[in-house]
Amino acid sequence: MSRSVRLDRRSFISGALAVPFFGGCCSFGCRNKPLRRPGPNDLVNVGVIGCGVIAKGTNVPGFLNDPRCRVTIACDMVREAPEYFYGARRSNFGAEGLVSKDGTARRDVCGSRIVKALIDKRYGNTDCREVFDWREVIADPSIDAVCICTPDHWHAIIAIAAMRAGKHVFCQKPMSLGIEEGKAMVRVAKETGVTFQVGNQGRSNPSFRLSEELVLNGYAGAIKGATICIPGNDHWEGHGHSPARAPLPKYFSKEGWDLWQGPARHWEGNAYIPCIHDPTCWRFNERYGGGMITDFGAHEFDQLQRGLGTDLSGPVAVENMKTDLRKDNDVFSWAGKFSFDFVYANGVRVHVRTIDKEAGYPRQTVFHCEKGDVGSRSGKGVLPPELAKFKESDFTDKDKRLYAPKNGHDSSKFHESDFLDGILERRQCCSPCEVGHRTISLAHIANICERLRTDRLDWDPVREVFTGKLAAEANAMTKTEYHNGWALDA
Image 1 (cartoon, rainbow, N blue to C red):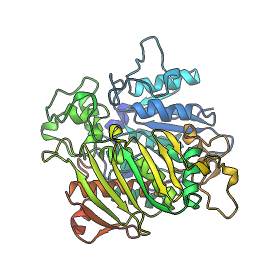
Image 2 (cartoon, helix red, strand yellow):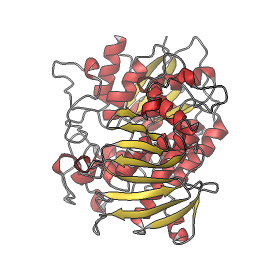
Image 3 (tube, one colour):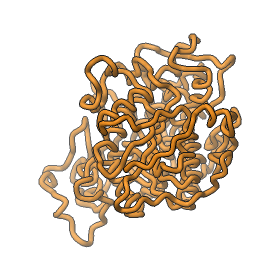
Image 4 (cartoon, one colour):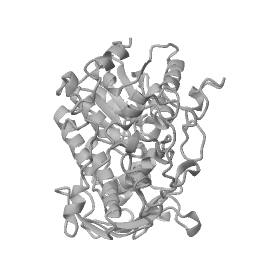
């Protein structure tokens, strides 16, 4: 039976949480509460924070398909937002079977009401609660774990608050908005002992793991280099780079608009700018996201790090940075096209660039090895001919092996189930906090180099600081600014 505690929103908001609190969760007195440990026969109660396309199409279906948990809260300050598009595509991203076809939940609509409808339909009841303020989810003693699907500028504050409250955390990628945020998240995860899963579901993909283990163990010969191609920062739905202001959409109340922005610095007059504030467009402004280098780099750099055996380390430099970054980049913060190299201590050079299919650069993460290329290109595996029939069972006891989810959960479709395995078995899982932090640090390093308009920065992966030329300026940019009374409780 689902354990549930109902908190009245009006009294909750008008009480201790009526104004922003300083730190993750000190306003309601939960400094490292005991960790939630459901018993083997208990259902894991999950609260979903953020009800956009990722929650609706990926994480909520993942949790709904696992009978060991119940999604009991759908939290968003928006109940229903029309045309919650992702690029020019209009779909439910795999959730078609859970969405009503009678017009009550159109394919391109998101929000807490829509996600609650998906949950209620699956469970055959109306028990799931809609919640406006994420702090109510953190305060709910019935919640064992949270799934954070908000824009990036909220990840660290919510994750740390949840960990302090003794709740396990599934945090969508990119894990953080900046390097210091990630370091704080790692510290608190270790201090509290929570199970923490980053939404880099590629780590649960057995074909990715096979390629990475082949490279890691030298089956393709020495690594000569690598190439990664990710999307450039082209804008969604024809907005372009317009700084034009517009009236606040009807789906936002003033209270909701303030909460959506949270710790991000407001624009003059608390303006709404469709170019960066329409659904999913926030990733193109540095107040809310890191562009495609963080958004897709979270996946591709993760594959790179595993194949190189540097999950808890990183490169020593970023070099040859070339971008078309605009001079008037306050609203649209990131370059449309870019190319640069990561350099590792062993001399391996990794070339990263924007996708250009016509020029022969589709999406890819490929290791260039002595015996040929290994990795993935255009969604298909790439192996030298002599390794084409290599299987997991061909590895020996002497080989280095990567984490593999439990049998039955060894697929990117079961990344949420691997998280539940970690909670119920009291261990970490496939994509733990520190690994996610190290992966996304590569993206932050590159973005800092881009914003400084320099062609090279040196990085110390042990101390996690920039060194050499422009080190002071670069290290200052590892810190995230917080506004409107918000701060990390780290």
